Image 1 (cartoon, rainbow, N blue to C red):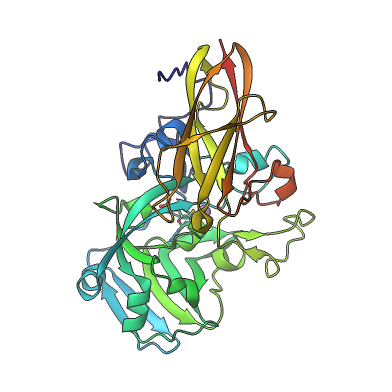
Image 2 (cartoon, rainbow, N blue to C red):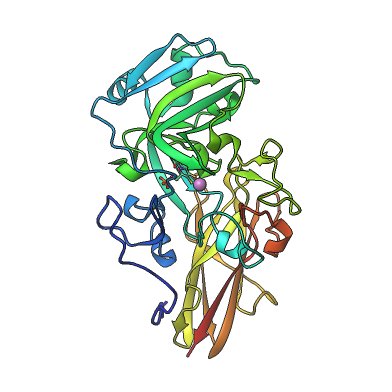
Length: 377
Ligand SMILES: Nc1nc2c(c(=O)[nH]1)N[C@H]1C(S)=C(S)[C@@H](COP(=O)(O)O)O[C@H]1N2
Ligand SMILES: [Mo]
């Protein structure tokens, strides 16, 4: 099938070279700290997203860690220890996990059609699928004697200083002990068999499959077993979900829902919004992700949601935490055309239709049907 993609009229800024990987073709969302997402059609060219096309979400400047950087492990029941990456590699079995990392703010631009939100205006590209290599956090926790108790938390500190509403502090977050001990939660030094690039967390980062990207701390400096969640501003005052009637001014951050597990989502990545296409046969492509529940079906409408066709999966469902790319070959008539995608999980649950039904002032977790408008000439 021939893919007919006309001139891209959408606002794609391919010129950014701020990234430490010079080959990046990224759309910059914030120059300082550098935040960027790939152009959507490039994002889904491969099952595994290359580092050069993997979104970068950083709250502060990329730290430059010395060779021999050590990660401290401490806290409840733990005899204080520290490990270099080489020592971790030598001490524990190396594991690889294919998993999507997605920012809770992915697709915020769709939420912004409902109203003004805080946060960077991510389109559909604050997501990537990679094979991560490292050691299990569970193996490290066992080795340092950390208790396996459901009421404990494991907190992670990054080497970067971040600013959350004027409060400067090291990046810090936490997850519950039960998740920390899940077999796919890794301390990772490689992505797709390459050493982690500086902006993706070198030399060592967390990978917490199934959870919002924010829990996968980059540039790890410290791991601490605690009986309360991290008090760092990123954990305490950010990445929380509030009901529609709460505003940035009225939010009591202690009351918000901490965004951990990520919901079912899907997006059209090609053609792109605002693109001009030639009439005739073309292919609509994108990704869908359901994490633990798996994606069972993807439906695409070329009539603005009036009727639907089932898309074909490009990826098998074997990678538990991986995405499934999909495509639909179709014919589009001349004129303005309105494409929509919606996915279903293995429980038969679909996505909500409209973003106003999930409105929250920070624009998190936009999972509404994804719409793309194109001009067919
Ligand atoms: N130390 C540190 N870790 C971090 C962040 C950060 O700013 N500092 N950003 C988090 C967020 S919000 C996301 S979505 C992911 C993004 O990872 P990536 O830049 O490798 O795509 O990293 C997470 N880990
Ligand atoms: Mo994020």
